[in-house]
Length: 256
Image 1 (tube, helix red, strand yellow):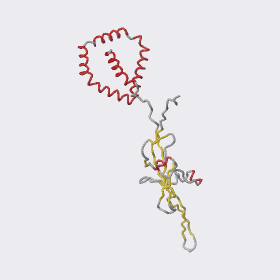
Image 2: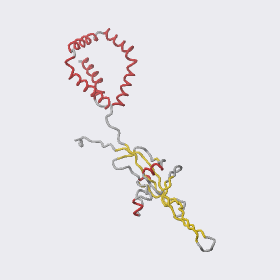
Image 3: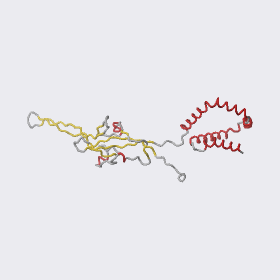
Image 4: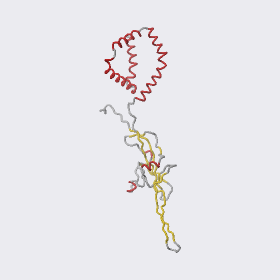
């Protein structure tokens, strides 16, 4: 009875870890292998010499019961199999980790927010932080055209991920390609900084009439019109951050 308990415990110790899904990729690999083996045997089992297999297995079991044969087998394993056993297990674990994919990685996307600043005065060179908006609030945007103020949040910390998504990294990154996103959106009437803080400022063109008098006093000879470029009231720059879709854990009561 003691021998039976020892054999029973040894079988459970060998079979249970790879089949109880404590290591889900390993257990999935084992069950996939058993399923494929069952399919192959279902198709070609009638072609296999089962009597010869049974005879060989029975004679091996009887032979391995001899102490001298057991010692020879153990010595052969130590000298011939042990050096390659660790490498084989390492390769198998690496293959399971990389090729057995149970859950697809969550979808990731890039989100953006625009930092808007406004002039403190019409001719002032100082800028005031206004808000963080999902829109660049450019001169030809619908909000500007109908006279609405920009919409967003006052502080960077209040910007939240879209519904159903969560942040994929720790912080926002300034988009250094200000010229690229301006061209992609076909934004007009702005001046782009390609270096430094990457601000995209409104550009205002003002008409200036230059009158030139002739030799006779009081007589206008020619009137020239020129356009003067001036920085407008608003400027903005783009910040980006990665988000990933939230994984919804389905409980046993919600599985359908």
